[in-house]
Image (cartoon, rainbow, N blue to C red; front, side, top):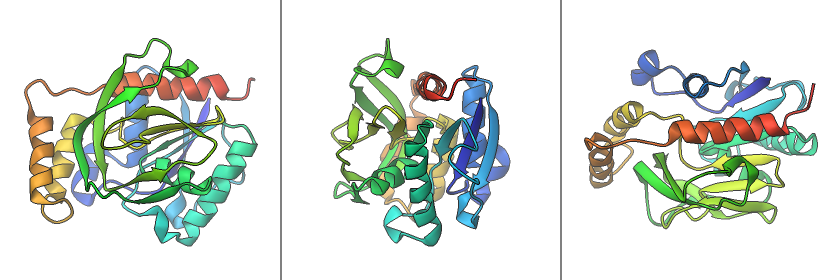
Length: 242
């Protein structure tokens, strides 16, 4: 199965040599969880787009430092592609910025959350009424790093993950698109260094300190591998059959 990774950002210069790009983090996570896909990366920020929605069997949109309401030309083109992928019935997974731009493409509202930044390890309640969540526990925990979030969900989106901090943390669109606000591809080590890097400059000190306390707790762990299985199952079950 060929997965097209639509890269909307890249890891900070201070971390890229150790951890790779956002696209690399997804490849590493799927490898860690035992899934062998073929990948094609498109840096859509630089205008590198596929020829069409059917160029790959499934798609992933990464996180980004950009805000969807900037509505830059490449974002407008990406939203058109999202709708094309949906019409072509190719599966798509969107993470963080990917989660937000899909919502924007379908008429949802994305903006800065009045509750501020979400960083560190966040837990989400699961709505198990979806086939890719078969056998899922009642909640899961992964790394978070966002101030923007989906404030009003599109009409065709159903909620599969939620929390008090992020009501629309996980959405499914017409059983074709799955999106998550938080980051299964961020390891605890990466999250730790990213918070420390952004502390004070981007993230308020007190919020960063709380996040660092979470990731440095001796019992800290995430459910990233389990979520990787969900994403992989969603993609493979909905991909075109050979």
